[in-house]
Length: 189
Length: 189
DNA sequence: CCTTCCATGTAACCGGTTACATGATTGC
DNA sequence: GCAATCATGTAACCGGTTACATGGAAGG
Image 1: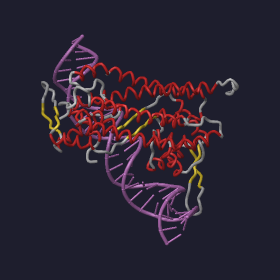
Image 2: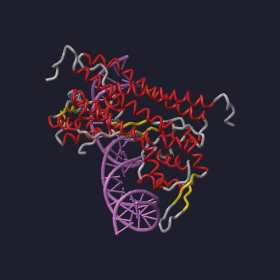
Image 3: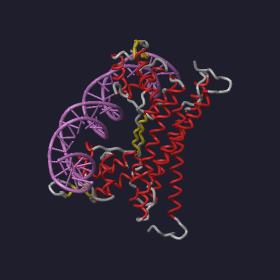
Image 4: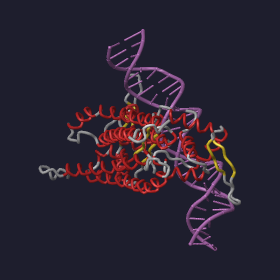
C-alpha cells in the first residue's frame, strides 16, 4: 500500500472538483467521516506529500490578503485513484464501544442492560437523523446530472443505522419479555 | 477516560474467569475483535499496568519449565469494569474501505461498480460464515447456565452482516436494472 | 464592533500494529 | 522427530487525534 487510505479520500474528493484543504476537511466532516474520518493534522501534510508526488497540483488563489491554495487532481492522480478503486482488496474495521459493553453485559441486571441498549439506540438514531437531513440536498444536486438521486454510501448509512435502531428496540423488547415470564415473576432479588 | 478501552476488554474477559495473556488474546481473536481488536503489543503491557494499579492480580502458574502467569480480576477491578459499563458515553467508529470506494464510484462504469459491491458482499459473507459457525458452541455452553442461547453481540454480528450481504445484493440488482432499461439499451459505449 | 467563518498549519501525544525474538509443551 | 500450539514479551513504526497558534474576511 503505497498511499494511505486518507490520501485516497483527498484524491476522491478532488476528483469531484477543485478544493482547498479547508474545503476538503469540511466535506469529509459531512460525508466520508461516517465511514472514514480525517483531521487537519492528516489533511494538510498529506496535501503536501501528494503534490510532491505529482498526484495533485496546487494553485495559489489568495482571497484578499488571506493565503489560499486550491488543489486539483492531475492525470497521474486520477490514475492512482482509479487503480485503488479497482484493486480487489478491501478492509473493514469497527470500534463499537456500545457493542463491547453489551458483550460484557452478563454481569449487569436486565434493567442496566436495557439502559445500554437505549444509549446505543440513541446514538444510531442521532446519526440517522443527520444522514436523512442530507437527502433533499443530495437529491436536488444529483438529479440535474442524471445520477441516482441518493448516493450509494448515503443510502447504506441510512439503511444501516435504521436497521441498528430496530435491532436495539427488538433486543430490548426481548429482554423485557424474558424479565417477566408468567411463571418466574420475582427472579431478580 | 482513565483506562483505555482495551483495558476494559481485558477486565471484561477476566470477569468471566482466570486467564493468561495468551488466552486473552486467543479469546479476543474469536470474539471482541469483530468490534474491538487487540494485539499482543497492547495486551501484555496493559496487563502490567492493570496489575500495578491493583485492578487485576497475576499468579505464576508455570507449566513445567515454561513460565506462565494467570490473572484474575480484583474487587477494585470489578468495580472499575462496572463503572465503565454503567457510564453513559459510548463511541462508534467505522473504517470501511469498501464503502469509501463506493462513495467515489461515480467515476466508474456500472460493471466496475458491480465488482466493488461484489467484493464487499464477499467480505461480509465470510464474516457471517465465521460468526454462524460459533453459534452451536455458544448455545451449548450457555444454556447450561440458563443464559440466553446466543450472546447479544453475536446475534448483532450475524444479523448485521447478513443485512449487509442483502444490501449489496439489492444495490447490485438495482444497478443492473438501471443499466438495461427497455428504452436505453446501448447507453454505455 | 463583534462574531462566525475561512484558511493554514504544527507539535505532542497516543493507541495500535507489525515484525521480531525466544523457547517449552503437546500430540501426531 | 516434527509441527502445531502455548506462552511471553519488545522495539520500531505509523496512522491519527488533540490542542494550540495565527490571522484575514464576511456579515450582522
